[in-house]
Length: 229
Ligand SMILES: Cc1cc2nc3c(=O)[nH]c(=O)nc-3n(C[C@H](O)[C@H](O)[C@H](O)COP(=O)(O)OP(=O)(O)OC[C@H]3O[C@@H](n4cnc5c(N)ncnc54)[C@H](O)[C@@H]3O)c2cc1C
Image (cartoon, rainbow, N blue to C red):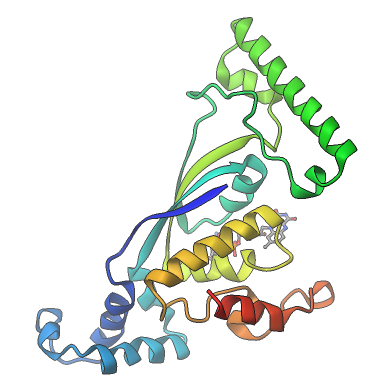
């Protein structure tokens, strides 16, 4: 799996701080630059975020390329509706027999790993057979499993990203999407350290675990992991 930040709003912290300031400033945007002071004005963003005025961070957006994730993972990703997606088509692209993801738990179990690999190759062989029989890609793909690899481009604004991280950096999330989410957080935080200063699972963002009896009980570790990014 490979996660890349392919594009983002330039200087996202500064833009969102200016957005926070515009609500309080008597002068128009065009006059901002003469008053702008990095040190003091970034504090307006912190202030807005602390007060819950989070719409200001909707002005910053981030586009990620997720390569080689499973369809099981991408299916969960696209449940996040306040985002834009473009996914590799299984109608236009003929898949190779090695195009699948093997979960670490299966790879670590020799017997399971061997039978999993055999089953995957059998699936892909039959997929090829169907194509050879003249069945179209869009119908032959019905034999393909959740493990099938895919590539997807996703764009989210910073507000949606924080919500996504709250849910998907959580230990309760499936391992693959969780790995993706932590990588996305690390990349986004590198470009917008202020916006994502509290980024991480719900327990990191709010100090509260909404999973109740299903909590992993690792709030301290999660806070340390997020702080280390
Ligand atoms: C650990 C875990 C387990 C899960 N298990 C399941 C499962 O078993 N079955 C299942 O189906 N799903 C499951 N999900 C997916 C989950 O139910 C959500 O669909 C997914 O996390 C997207 O979250 P969302 O709707 O908050 O976010 P987004 O779609 O990213 O939306 C962000 C926010 O915008 C607002 N919003 C967006 N659309 C609407 C709307 N139409 N109406 C009102 N407000 C809106 C909401 O405030 C929402 O929180 C699971 C998710 C997690 C993290």
